[in-house]
Image (cartoon, rainbow over all chains, first blue to last red; front, side, top):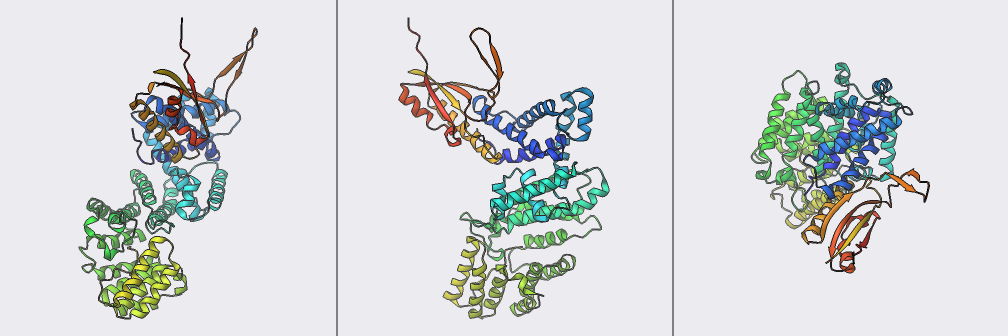
Length: 431
Length: 113
């Protein structure tokens, strides 16, 4: 019997969320111990008795039983969640008071509470994302470090420090207070967006795309979408954005792990069902007065998704959307992509001029697709020598083997052909 | 064919959910293969990691334990093999070794008149 991929990791997030609510956020370590114990029990028992019909329910029930043991043993010594402690003092640890905590809806709510708690404004964004992966997605410190291309020690410190901050809060975020949800939701969106982007454009050493991170981000959004207060236009826009990007992954990444830029992708490989979902979500996200960067980015992704070929893309619309994005959330990377779109709309000279107009281009010095964009545009207007230099620059700051391989190929193209008529892909990772 | 008991002596518990899942999967696969090859007479049972230790010749003392996470018997199975060498051979694929654990291979004593 094969367990489904990452089952334990997913269940870890659910169980930790529920148990942390029961034990109190200051006892998260205890919650994690109980979860670990449930996994050990599965490892001990399943080989002998077979995998239960519903492994998730089995694990959750095991965790519940252990939680009751812990409460019985320690409820006098430990301060648990205030409401629970009071109930325990009254009736001497009657396990039935926990029943309600383990109902399906309560489990979803606990995951949401945990998500909002992880996104506490006192934590830097990187900590919020790391914490969500660790606590809600069941990633170990090593797995988080691997995903972020950072050292184990650095990530461990960050997570420990973040958990320390959470512990000092004494209680988890209350998802029933509308004003609080409204204020915190954008922070949550941002953290999930970063998580998704990290997977999609990731700088992981062995792979430029970590589909797992994209999947986790989409799983977290799906949790937001079940809650009436959190299913906002911005949530739908973020969901649309992720869907429309993820739909292109089969064309973006080949079996050998090489990344193909948008222009070079086989569009028949794109996941049409997912594009349909994404477009529907985008449509739903428009029902409101709010326009977020997620709306605009999703709209850009939608234009690409609907174009039968790169040349048939509605570049006029794309440039408009990038203008909008620059107004809502300007960044040098957005400015670069706007310039590239202008290059597609008006020709390479205009693209180069738009790049030259980016303020403080030094901010893009470490971004390999800055030089690469210049290279592609130079190549298109026939300046093969300049293109060559720019691709070498891009190669020198490439962040992983996939990127290096891609830039080496572009250099070879320039050298062997030296011919600007060669079909050149969009000079960026697709956005 | 002779009968043997495998006593599974636990190693380090898995440190992450992903590791725990991999170990669980490997255990199940190994037991399945053992059964397929006809060497598994009885899967046996897993044991709780807690219990009581009773000792003393006349007056008995009862103590709690063992509570160790490591180096305790966490289960046993009944194995069929033609001799101890084959039984040992059967144990080699057990995932317990990668966690620093061990398998005790013990021949079942034959009852003779």
